[in-house]
Length: 372
Ligand SMILES: Cc1cc2nc3c(=O)[nH]c(=O)nc-3n(C[C@H](O)[C@H](O)[C@H](O)COP(=O)(O)OP(=O)(O)OC[C@H]3O[C@@H](n4cnc5c(N)ncnc54)[C@H](O)[C@@H]3O)c2cc1C
Image 1 (cartoon, protein in one colour):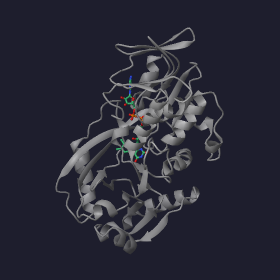
Image 2 (cartoon, helix red, strand yellow):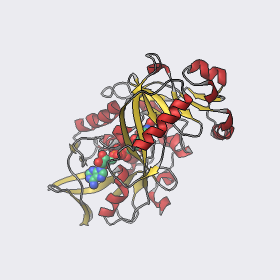
Image 3 (cartoon, protein in one colour):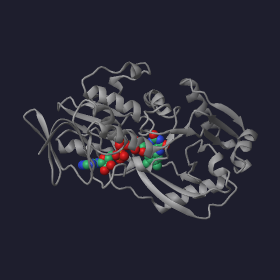
Image 4 (cartoon, protein in one colour):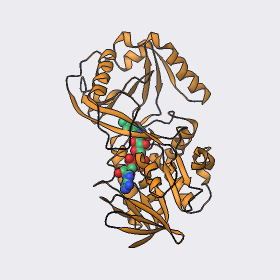
């Protein structure tokens, strides 16, 4: 039996960023069920840093993460590169235009309003009838997910983090004021359990006889196809339909497309549905003047949300030493720096760091108790 200060369950972006903050001052062990870290949602994202996306809480977490991504510690490498995002709509999508501009105004977002001609100059591959307006956001950036994930883990390993893959946690019990975490072949004695199990967060809480927070995983499908010409493979911003019926984004010389769907799912190794890919292809071909000759690769991932669509990060009141860290929905990559720092401070018993407080981040907004 191994004895540690903190046992993190889940080797995705959430678990890795917490490990990064805790490893310098605590003995930390990470348990991941799959053969490698980042296997589930973290390895299946669209890799966008979109500071004007999501609720006020999400936007605060994203803004508070920006400095870290702009100048990460040396062992990380470059995380951000310019991309931009462009929401577009047809003449019959005026309600969507009003919704987006109203939201932007209410939250002081800076979006450039583009005419149809300006949108077509930026993306000539769009059909003229598909565009009546555009809203451009030059703050959106591409993120290198692998550099970020491996950077957190490399730095934490330097401080003694141990990562064990192929270890599915099957039991969590309370014993003498500490926790016992069991896998098929390991027994861990720990002061703190961090539940960073992504789509399985409620299930893992159940192993410790803790009531669920009613977090729901939603499937989202993505696929790649060849760019219509060599330029568009890198030049386009991320292009999002005003009613979120699809999006496309350059991705390593190809184009990534998605239906933008949210289909409730049990926690699982999510797989793409052929029909979802076909519907997305049809919508993209309706908006753009080129055919998608072949889907090169398709995949699906789960975006897990709580009832208020904000993340949860905090100790369970009914079970000392059990820390919830999940429900990060479609924002878990872009918010990881701030969320990791938040959880790191809370688990170490420190005050909310000033840097996070100055961005309006409040413990109460992330507390699991708010969902009880
Ligand atoms: C199509 C798509 C596009 C997205 N685009 C973006 C984007 O552009 N920007 C952005 O910021 N976010 C995006 N996201 C969201 C982002 O991917 C997630 O918010 C993030 O990856 C969640 O990280 P996580 O660590 O909570 O979950 P995961 O990466 O799923 O990690 C949880 C881990 O816990 C492990 N686990 C579960 N149960 C156990 C157990 N009992 N024992 C041991 N291990 C266990 C799992 O195997 C898993 O590896 C997107 C998601 C999808 C699906």
